[in-house]
Length: 335
Image 1 (spheres, one colour):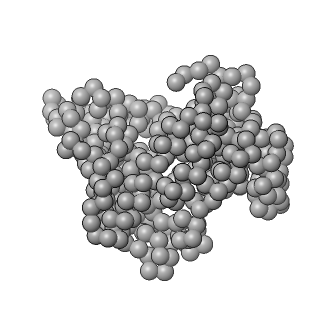
Image 2 (cartoon, helix red, strand yellow):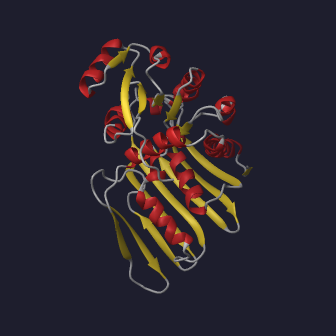
Image 3 (tube, rainbow, N blue to C red):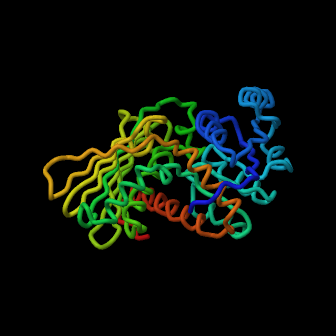
């Protein structure tokens, strides 16, 4: 939904000095008059002060609780490790703050349901920035227009290499593992392009023997009506990402679906039964993080809170649980 930006910016508090906050969200918030960053917090007062000085943020808090209690903060950005997403989001909601929370929103659907009492009182959303990138919208319009016939298969590959034992992605107690970290994007891709939720899941996982988190997760998701998502995501594999959309009369390949280079054009290719040639489509540069933040600010200013964002996040959470259950039990899981 397009809105004229409100003359009153949303007053943000940044919950931690995490890398994604420093490198993506804070710069994105500073791009638009829709936003004002009024505070930042860290478990270390020194780290909070350093970040505040670096980014010109007026207030530095030496604890998360202090930022959540700050009356100047209207909305909280939560980029903490996965196991702290729901607890700190809940604390912020209880304090009357809106929350934009990094993905995955929760490490279980039951945990996520604890937020439901606040769903019609405040805005809280899962920070899937890819939903806001123009290339995702453009590619889906080809599908909707029937240019590749009926979409039958969405194929996703997403991987990187990280064997650092200190990294939160490799710490089981913090919700580590590739399925939570990047598998959530693969699931979202299927939901986005099929515009539906999956009905059945069958999966296999390879677990790191030391970290005990999944380092390779592959799954087949049945969306009904002959539609399938197949994905493979890995945290100890060569860096790569692709989304393939295979229809009855053509295909689309998105080259950099999840991390397109900021400030540069992105591209995808389309091939149809009417032409043997693979046609490349260039998409103008866009900051998907800025678009995400602007959409959230517009919701805060112009839309009534509803349970829609929670229900959407619950779909991904339940699918992730089903992938784990399928791999563990060696069976198809029905959603």
